[in-house]
Length: 274
Image 1 (spheres, one colour):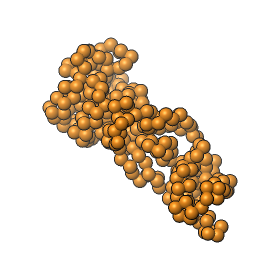
Image 2 (cartoon, one colour):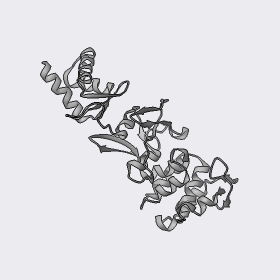
Image 3 (tube, rainbow, N blue to C red):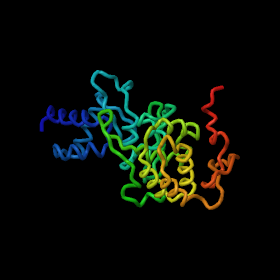
Image 4 (cartoon, rainbow, N blue to C red):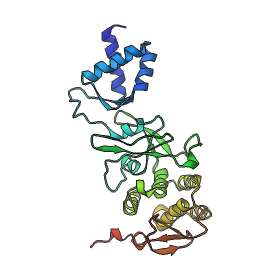
């Protein structure tokens, strides 16, 4: 293949992969052209030097649109998060934000992974990895509730709203705290409650089952929650009282969830107009 065709092949790949890993580029080039690793690395270095690409971090690149300077080119954070490990899934508050349901906009994009990964930053955005809960690591589908969608010219893996509801209640520190979680979830008009309950039980956490059950019972009318949904969660609630918040914020004991819930959350006092 001559240099011109070789360049066109690379540009075609860049056009269809706005964010990509070194390994993906090598695999695509080997399949399309049979190019050696050395040749492929030289092509990548050429386009990086020419300003056609931005290095997001070692081994991860973003395509620069024609006519845009590399230092000002926008790079979609959800595409970055999806590419940070081979199994990365946009999750928690970042998933709410992706689905357009976050109450506040953040520049923090958490993602699930089985791997041990390091947090990274890129142009003011933070990408903290969160290891999958132990109960899910051996499951081939990591518990389900993950979708892959076209986004910003690429592909994003992200948790569904049903899984995200459970995840932010399971680990509220990644959801922004109770007010942010409540306000965000309350903007969702519909959940597949069978999927919510099934996923919540896969986590094997009595506290999480109780938190999800409490949230659904508090929003029973709006979300059309059936007795069966609450009964399934109640059967796995703690046998002894637990605090809703790990900081043990004082409050009222709520049966049948055996949860001590602060008045602030119980009354949703943040919604009051001063």
